[in-house]
Length: 328
Image (cartoon, rainbow, N blue to C red; front, side, top):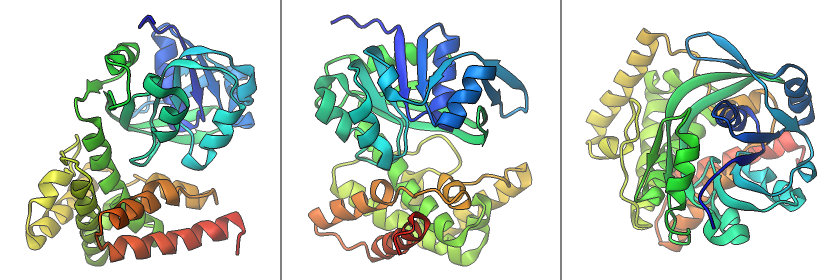
C-alpha cells in the first residue's frame, strides 16, 4: 500500500473538524466535510468562513455534505465528531480509508477506528482550539500542535505519512509515545471540563476562584494517578498548564501556580475562553460524559484505584446530560 494521501473525508465536521478540513483543502487535498445539514449547506453556498485568532477572516471553498453515504473510499479519514455520534457516522459511511485518525476527546478515541480499520488507524491528540460562530462560520481560537503517533496496532510508519498530509498548514508533532500524550490531555480534560461543566465559569475564573481552583487540582491528581497506573508517562503539553509539572508540585505550590495562570489569562485578555463542555451546555447539546469521564473511572476500577472526586463529578455531569437529553 502506498503512503500518498490525496483524498480526505472529515466525519463529524463541527468547528474543529471543519478547521482541519480547510487546512488540508488549502494544501491541495481533495477534502469532503460531513457535517450537520445547516453547516454543510452554508459551506456549499458560501465556502467555510474562518475567523483567525488575529481577527482576520478567510473563506475556504470545500465540499460539504450532511449524509456520509455520499462519500466513498478515501485515502484519509479524520473522525472529529462528538464521541456519542461515532457509531452512527461510521455505520452510515460506506467508504474505507487507507489511513485513519481521530481528534476526539478521551483516551479511548481511537478504539473504534482500530476495531474497524486495524493497522490503518493511528493515535492523535489535537491542541487546536476552534468554536462554531454560526453555521458555515468558525472561529479559530488557539493554534496549538497536533500530535500523531503509531499505536501498537498501527502499520509501521503510518503516523509519519499522515503528518506529511497535515504539515502544510499545521504544526504537527510525531510522537513515539502517543498514548502518554493522549493521557496527558485527558487528565487536564477531566479537570477542566469537570469544574467548568458544574460551575459554568469561563476558564480563567476557574483558577482565580479558590474553591474551583482546589477542586481542579484534586481532579488532576486523581486522574493523573490513573494515567500513571495505566502506564503513561505524563508530559507537559504546550500552553501555560503542564500536567507533569503541576503534579510534581506540593499542593500549596500547585495552587499558587494555578492562581498565577488565571491572573496571566486575565491580564492578557484571555477572558472569553469557553471550554467545549460549557459551549455544549449553553446550546443544550449532549455532553461527552462517557468519553471524558466514565472511561477514566473504568480504568481506575481496573487498576483498583479510588477516584472519589472523579466518580462524583462523573455522576453529576451524567445528571446534567440526562436533563439536556430529556431522559429525566
